Image 1: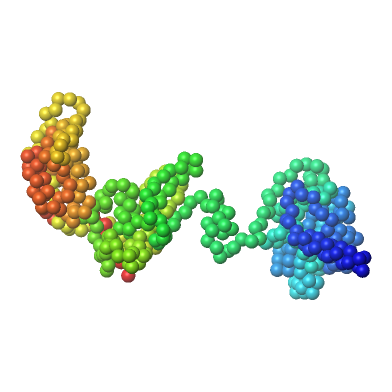
Image 2 (image 1 turned 90 degrees about the vertical axis):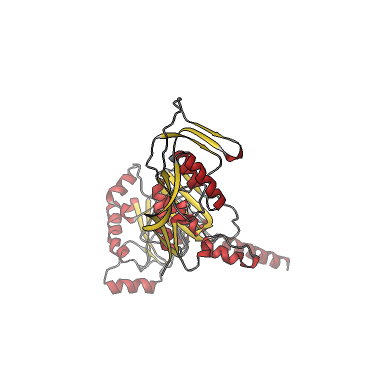
Length: 438
């Protein structure tokens, strides 16, 4: 009884070991090939029974299947190599197909069988050397070490002769990933195994739930000579604004007065009342994300791509158009040249928002202050002073928030004291027009 129990245990152990051996790990260049016994040979008896019988000679394994007509047309070449080099090499054709399928193939194409042995229904060598495309060649030296896993075009008379003479050969590695998922997006395939190889891309995404705060980024990486533009969870109006300003900072279209919204739901471009039950729906409609990674360090390329992608993938189209609109005009009413004797410029902020600027241009003080301080003004502000020289200025307050009538009157009084004024007039100017897609 004890002997029977021991035999049963031993049999179970052997079965377990054999089961583990069936999970063969692919062999790489430099590995020693285990002794594999060949299965059925298409042409009948084959004097070589296993890889061990090939020791002492170069062995070339030629993997193929019945779906590869080119493989069959190349088989006479393997015969020629065998005839030329005799017992110094051994060429073997390996396939996993059944005899019936292989013979049917040769009958259909009316080609004679090669003299190189064709091993049928192989699973062991196919597991040691997995591949997707055929022909697939493996060169094994006389010591049973894998020297090359390569393409069939390397199996030339000259290369075989050089190998047998001990010369150093360099063949391209035919590396094939058998689990590649054709249906997966490239950056996610294989858990992101290609991310180092993905050098450049553009990406448009809708609202990323849970990303509450993200600062727009414009970066250059000298190590890869690549530039990145990334804007996450911003209003569509901001995305278009960045794209057409060609900057993530201030620009002409940062001003609300420079947009024309020809959209059904204008509310999608502005902050809404934060009603908890509506926030998720608002976010999905109003917010989106964009990323571009492109070569070089010219941001114009990034913003050109951003314009293109927003027009293709967002719910809106945008373009710069000339429109006749009512504008607020900064005009010259007697600007005086600077009386400052120094060569530099002096700017001093005083109490109660008052400020003094000496030896400054109108553009770098008054006009820039009005533009930057009135982003939400409905009327575009234009500089029509036609004065580029330097002047001295003294203002009792800031030039922001001109939509407030009180601020507007005070600012206008300051302007008049400095030889300037504000007037209304219609002008043909560039406007960023954003429309719903039809």
